[in-house]
Length: 215
Image 1: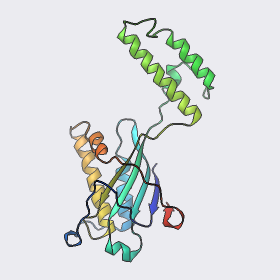
Image 2: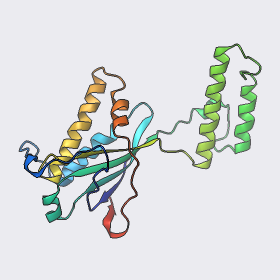
Image 3: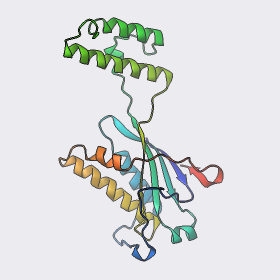
Image 4: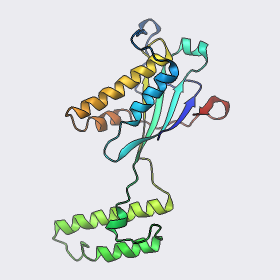
């Protein structure tokens, strides 16, 4: 489930996104959704944009909510994180028989398994080396889960201001995300990863106080 924050004032991305001139803004009579429905539709599509075990996490919707400001600048900027879905395969991989192991138990289990594939004991065995690498990753995932230190992978943004209304720009973003997903489905593997790489940015600090509202 997405964790969504609405910002009352548009923060356009500082780099990489040109603004549409006022005279070049467009209408789209085919998009009839209300602002709320347009936002919900976009968020539903964004939430489906997963890559393997990577999914979308925190989302910041940045746009002018004041009607006069929205009329002057109807642009929408969306900042979002992706996170790795929970992976509990480390439990079986390390042979742990407790749902809440201690760090010492994790290390002990790793060391016991590592004896069977450690590179120092099997320096010329690629299969053992790969097994050891997987065990090392399982140990790290186990520790991250116990300590609650699972990290978000990256930060991204996407923005649109070609249309005359905020709701239409949300619909444009929805159409863009849907298009990326369609390309992936019809047989261009990796397109989402390359697309997200183009959206990469540092997530600016959320607006504080009265300028932000959480939904």
